[in-house]
Amino acid sequence: MGINLQKGQRVDLTKGKADLNRVMVGLGWDPVSKGKSGGLLGGLFGGGGSGSNVDCDASVLMLKDGHLKDGQDVVYFGKLKSKCGSVQHSGDNLTGDGDGDDEVITIDLKAVPADYDKLVFVVNIYDCIKRKQHFGMIQNAYIRVFEPNTGNELIRYNLSENYANLTTLVTGEIYRHNGEWKFGAIGDGTTDAKLGEVCNRFQ
Image (tube, rainbow, N blue to C red; front, side, top):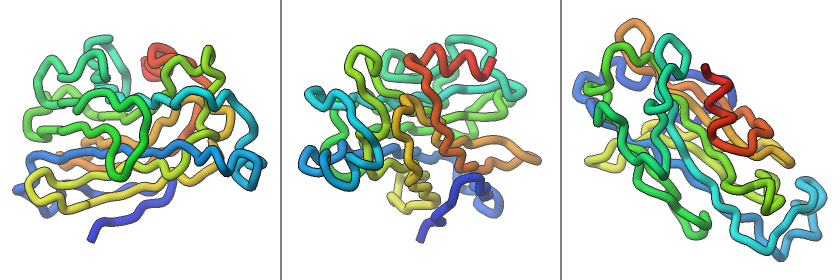
């Protein structure tokens, strides 16, 4: 049974689990039902262009000393594997329809070079300005960590806040602390229109 986290909580990931070498990070979301646009959800989240699917993209920023020091240290749909090979992206999901994880990142914790101290997981809306889309048009967003061999879920964080008019979510992070890996639930939204703008925040 996995641990359900609230925003701001942090938990040990590898402490006491010497055999946990690889983890998978699943990110999921669903479009708000069109039938609800005039009801409670519409009132909470406000309007937006609902004619196109909301294309959310998950990315990983690999930080050194808490900073993004090289543009090559971003793993996303256009660059599916880190240069060290320790982080692998499953590829782009264009709609978010259906159950389960929409995009998955596999991490070989033992292979992450020692000079990287933090992996930050970001979800942004592709072409959000042109499409007039925001995270008020998304529901059931979450980030979870699970074991690749068994599928056993270790951690889940449901992003249940009102993210209306925000276009990027910094969902969570996996980071080193005293030789172990930990997970932190962040859940912060921004109005950054592109992944590059998000990256600038971590430089």
